[in-house]
Figure (cartoon, helix red, strand yellow):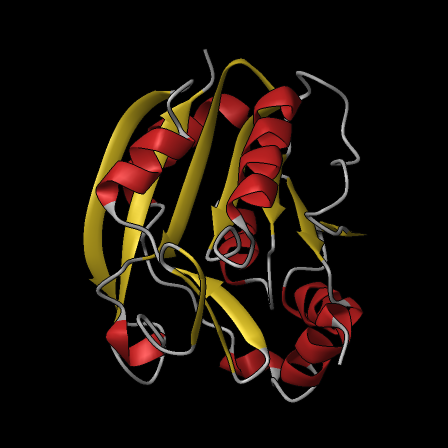
Length: 207
């Protein structure tokens, strides 16, 4: 099954009333407020958890995902959002320096290392010189959601049941964002799903 079709099958069965957000963006609201006049780009928006959070607080959001079904859910819960079909493996469809804030919540950990570096480089291109990326990615401690399971393809990158997932430790994140000004990198447990999920939260500024 193609990647987009897989995610379509997931989001097709999600009722818009099931979409809830956690408050991981709360500590960054003052920084995000600098983007009030420029849309926040939500990469890999899924059903729109973070887009909903932001639009409820008056932000303009461009919600991007590979799945048309995901974007349908976004439109149901956040009709003011601009939705765009985007494959992260392609160049991002935004002008260089056009964004002050990009969010990538649980969307950067599905790729080989070379592709991950290209995606992060594209995000950097799209951000203005003081722009900020906020992201969450799988931790190597995320054993409830596949850490250490399946066929090892690269260090901490596995294929299991036909899907590929990367799990990060601090050194890998520091390497990936070596050309950025890292403002925060913090390992924590989130509780959006049925089981606790261990993730890294990272805030990094373009420089």
